[in-house]
Length: 163
Image (cartoon, rainbow, N blue to C red):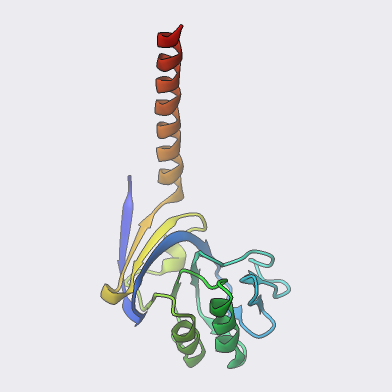
C-alpha cells in the first residue's frame, strides 16, 4: 500500500483522519456553506451539494467576508464541521475559521496538497507535528477487494465443510 507523507505547518493542533474532500475552488463561508449540514451551497462551486461533515477538507483557502469563521463555528456547534483541514493560502479568515472549528489544520506544505490528494483518499492529519499521511483511494479499494475475496474463500470453505 502506497503512503505519501507531506510536511507542513500547524495552524490548529490535534490529530484526525478521514476521507478527503478536495476542491481547487476557494470556499465562501457566508452564503457558500450551509453550516447546519456542512454542505457547500455556493452556486457554480465544483463541490456544490457535497458535505464536508466528518471529512478532511482540502482546499486552497477562504474567500469572501469575515463571516467565514462564523459559519464554520456554527458548523462545529451542530456537529457538521470537517474532521480536519488542509489548505494552501493562509489568510486571517482561514486562520480564524480553523481555530473556531477546532479542526486540526495544516498549511504551507512541502508539496501542493491539491496535486497530491484526491477526493476519496484516506488522510491522516497530525497537525501538532505538521504531518499529513495520504493513502490513495486506489490502494484502499484494492485492499477491500483482497479482503472481500479472502472472506469469500473462507465462507466457501466453511460451507463445503458443513455439507
